[in-house]
Image 1 (cartoon, rainbow, N blue to C red):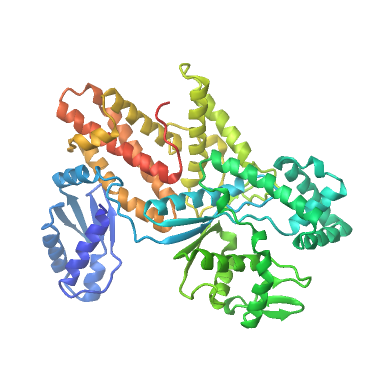
Image 2: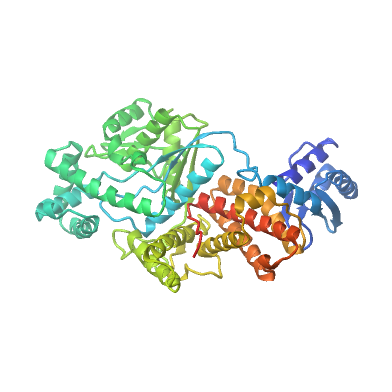
Length: 569
């Protein structure tokens, strides 16, 4: 049950009963220090509607107390309404919704949603800068699917363009074809080739010519390109699989896919008088971006990323017929994407009112607080990050001598996946941050390991008491016996609100904070009393049911985040 929404609906109905139909932005928030919920902003309604404040307060108090869920209402100066819930009603509600598969979180109206995320460039290793789009996109697809939507995933890879002319020209120059066997070597020689490209005009000219040859599918150039793409994508999908990222080969559509349609796109935009010829280039000027036009074809007849992006949107809308398209791309592309979206609407490639969204995110910074430049910086590759955290994780659990090598490796992998994902998911997606690998494993702070370990402890307690999550929730009855249990109960009732809010804002940190908070409350409960030693059977079953409900929430939450649970450690 979303209590905030319930209170809001009640207030709306109360205001309508006295002919106030206008929507007001009053706030309803948790305020556990003074009450369970607090309403703030009624004083504004009183002033604007010219209704006495005391009359409004008394009316709201009188009407709310008719609902069984509310136990007490207090009016606090200068204008707060403090709400206290009915403990017995809370118990009844938790006993009821905990038995539901998804805690009675009903599916939203089913929509077909296309999400563009990850999108690594070809011919280099996936690096730390690829983490954000990959992990945020996967979380968003999980939570929207959880809420009943049909998700179409697109991994738009950079497998075309000048970089291939540079790389292929270098390979040809030094006859390195037979040495092209792994992505590490390809990345290494590309850095060398790129530096030479900017120093040597003759090499640069040849590289540009090889791009044209590639576009025309000249056999020896085209076959070498295919080899590089195959090696890179194979390595990328190993990383996706290890990290439990639900992107498959079937979701991958490279820039090269749209090459055949680009000339048609350009001609169509000229015909519709959206694009114009300007100094032998084809350019689009939008009203709000006169100083920053979009070039869709260069003087040499070459196409740009903009042309491909327009073609991609047109193709996706026609092919998949989605209700919504979402891009998970960093904030530097904000203005560019606004222009691309507008061009697609102006050209009727998508409807004028179509919901196409850019969920922007901040950057991962280097030690100098500058954005990582993958072609220049000595950045960490995702493979290196995995290996570093694997080593730390293994050291963490190696103290337990009863574990065999297989079990240690299995637990290590789960901790590693959780750690890497949680570093990203626990951050506000809009902020920049420095990736500090030394502060990622802890049983005493907001980390994935803390939450994973809390789940494990609960399962262990349930097993010791000859029960499990399903049986405890199904057959035991929960009732509140302490202030701490009351706080946990309110937190449980917030779960639906947290899921909906997190999905609506595409902010995984909302779920992370919630899971950490409820894990902390469980730890407090665990430390205060050993459940196994409780002799009163009714009381013991009540507490077992409570922690079983917490474990169910942790399991659902971690699954949405794409983080595996630990059964034992």
